[in-house]
Structures are given as structure tokens and as C-alpha cells.
Length: 350
Length: 251
Image (cartoon, rainbow over all chains, first blue to last red; front, side, top):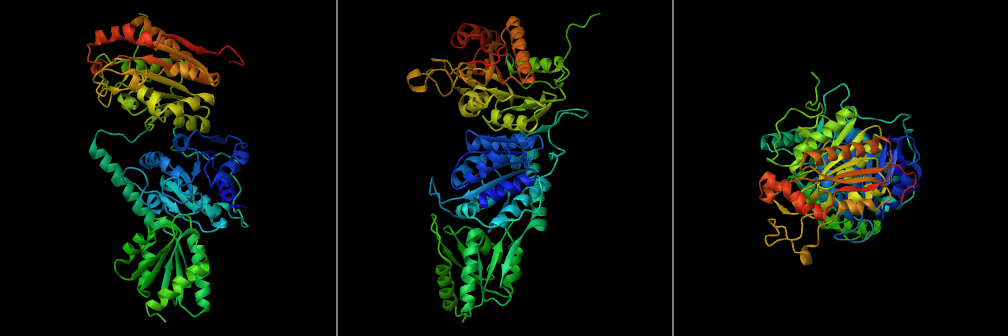
């Protein structure tokens, strides 16, 4: 199954009731899968919207009434959705947004890239807010994290992003789904369903009282602290005896893993730290690793974005180098292995 | 003694923040009267916009969710599709519906979304201080057309009701005004019919309401009501723009 289809199937099984999307490469298989499979399900709704802006606002409307809703796009389309994501965050409404990112800036290319890291992990739109950002690195993980995205989003009332890329979306791998779609539609109890037997409710963000808005910001950030404590996730590979640790996420981590196997065969002690949540960032794990390992190589398919989070996490407790390829250029594992090996010798680790 | 008029049940007893002579408070009351008479208070979801009516949720005693500027029709679409038993209406101004939200509005109408739009046209951006709206009349002075709207540069006022009447999913559109007791009665009748259209699941319905804005027009309330009749209705004629509620396969 392709990654894009796996996300769609996992979303349906997670009880996604509404999907609204707009065509953009490289994520069209996701929209098409929903058109074929979600639209036929009882009570479910699929709309090919007139724009990405409309799609995210339809998601907002569906979330307002308590439905599980999702949209997907790729980089330029995700930029258009930022207005809606900011409103979702402000109104404390759950929603799942998938970005199968591509090269930028501008229209860029349709090839995989990771240049939307800053946009994804710093909120993305206007105002002080964050979204949970999940970064899968295989088709199986795309499916698993899609299900998790819906649960996290509902649990913390926060829009949740799945940050993939064109390769993950297009590649085919075996995938196992661990859930069946729920028999009944899942309706959040706090959704607006009409003021029957209760006072009317308002979902809004605008206020003319700065103190009220300050309190909203404080309450959001208190929740963000809770998410940091409870939901930060990462994976490590061969770090126990490592002298150098590569930090990479998503498809780059997959490439790095192959490179590490190559240099390990040559006797270099190199490990991998792969953040699964990009926000919240697994800073504590890096701090823990920094007690033993001082050399870090950040590898990203961009000009260096996540490296800032690694540097912030290390706070001077280690040395950070960078290897990045922007614009949709994908280095092979052997190219990355050469970079690792050169750095290893330069730093006198052998 | 027979009660001939009462404060609408679905209108909260909050003092309106609107300027003296503004049409919004009248429109709010009319919508609430219709909601009460049709017994819809406990199943209605209102989608107010940014703009002067951003605080509409302080007055309507129904579930309300704020929309981003211009996105009302998309938000209403999502809400109605996810919860078809609800009666969903958007409340939008001319900048919201006819400028930034044009695409959302036309496509929601074209899909025949079962939603009702209350479109308040006062030919000006009110909340932001009286800038040119897409519906500003040619020659009308606003803060961004200090020498009057120049058709050769700014275009002519856009007639959204007529544009929306062209798409098949639109079933009922009427243009009314709230500048005289007679017009107010007609406006209420139109609002009622628009909600009825949604209840019968016939398609998209909209009522365009010409509404005075004495503050930004720099007129007294009475002058502004007269200006609606004298100037606005020349460009935006009152009446039913489209009604295919009786026909099975219209257009």
C-alpha cells in the first residue's frame, strides 16, 4: 500500500467522519482514497473543496459540531491552511492535518523535502500557539501515527499535524492495521449540537479584553507543558556505545539508518536519534545522550531547521555539525555514510 | 389582554453595541423571531463573521461558532455535513461574503449546501472604519475612496445575489431592506422562507439585506434610511432574485 493510502485507511479506521481536501501533488492518492472509501460510509462526508482555505475551514466547521475531521495537502497548500489552523488552535478544536511536504520555497518542486520543519513546529500561522507534530518514517508508522494523531488531538483539544514527505506518501510497503473502523460515529461531547436541554454555547476567539486573551494564551501553554511531559516520543538506534550520534527525522532518518549500518560495518561507533514528535521535541532524550556523547550530526532535507532544536536541547553540552540537501535532492545512504565517516575522522573519534 | 409582541426567546437580553440607526440589531431580532416561530432554537448553529457583527454571539441565544473572515460558508458546510440535523446559518457582511469569501460562498451555493446565509449589505466595511466594500456604490465616498468610488479603477458594485442565482444549487435568494416597517416585515418573511428552504432540504438559500450604516455613511439615521431607498435600491433592486423551491428540477 502507498503511504498516502495507508494514512487514509488508518484515518477511516480511527473514526474520521469528514475529509475535505484539494488536489496537490504528492498527496493526491490520499484524497482519492477518501473519495472512493470515506464518501460511501454512513454519516461520513467527503468534499473536494474549492481551495485549501475552504478545506481547512470545513474541517473547522466539522470539529465545531464534534466530528473527527481531517484534511491533507502539501507545502504550498499547507501555507494556505495556516489561517484555519490558527483558529483551530485558538478555539481548542481537534483536527488532523497531513502535510506530505515537497520542495520549496514558492511552488518549488513536487519532490520530497523537509523544509516545512519551522512552519510545522512553531505553530505555522499567526499568534502564539503550537500543534502536535508527528513525523513518521515508514508506511506502517504513517498508519499508526495517523490513528494516534486523532486520539492525541481529541485528548488535548489541539490540531495535530502529520509531517510526511513526497517519498513516504508515494512509496509502497506492507502495512498492518490494528483497528477496525468504529461501528458508530464518534461525536465529541463538547461539540455544538444545538442548545437542547442546556444553555447555548459559543466557540470564539475574538475578545476586546486583553486580559481574557492573555488568559487564553496562558491556558494553551499550560496544556502544551502537559503535552511535552506526556507525549514526547523518539527512537534511538545503536546509541549505547556511540561516539557520534546522527539526528534525523522522517525519511532522512531512514536514509541515515542505512548509512549508519554501512559505517558500523567499518567499525565506526555511530548511532541515530530519531524524533517521532517534532513538537514537542525530545530535548530531554538529547540531554540524556549528551552525558556520554559529545558529537552530533544533524541530517535534514533542508538548509538546517531542526538543527536549532538540537542546539537548544544540547545547550552547549555537545558539538553539532550539519548535513542538509534542500530543494528535493535526496542523497543516497552511501553519500550520507561518506559524510558521517569524514566527520568521524575529522573529529578524531577513530 | 392579547399579547401582540414579545421579546424573542432566542434573543439574549443584552444591550446592542451597534450604532444608533444601524440595521444589524433589526436583522438580529428578525432572525431570532423566525427561529422562535419555527421552533428551531435548540437545533440552530449560527456562524457569525468578523466585522461589526462579530459579537452576534452575544445576542443570539443559540449555539454559535466564530468564523474566520470570509470563511462562513465553508465553516457552515463542514458543520452541516457533519451534523445534518442542525439548522445552520451564516451571518455575513458585504466585505466578508462579497470580497474575501467569494469563493467559499459561490462553491457552497453551487454544491447546494443545505445552509442559510443572512447577507447584510451596507455598502461599506463598518468595523474597520468605513473603507470601500465590493458593494460600495459608484461615486460613494469612503475612507479608501475619498474622491468617490471610481468605476474605472475600483469596478462597479458587485451583485452577489444575482451572481449566486446563476448556480444551480441556489434555490432561494431574495433581496430585502430594513429601512421601513413595511420593508422590515418583508425581510422577516424572506428570512422565514430561507430557513424553510433549509428545513425542506431544497438547497442553498440566502437573504440579502440592505442595511443602513449611518456612522460610516456620515448621515443621520433618518437620512441613511432614505439613502437606502433613494440610492442603494437603484443598484440593488429589492425582490425575489431566484426561487425554485416549487420546482423539482430547476435551471
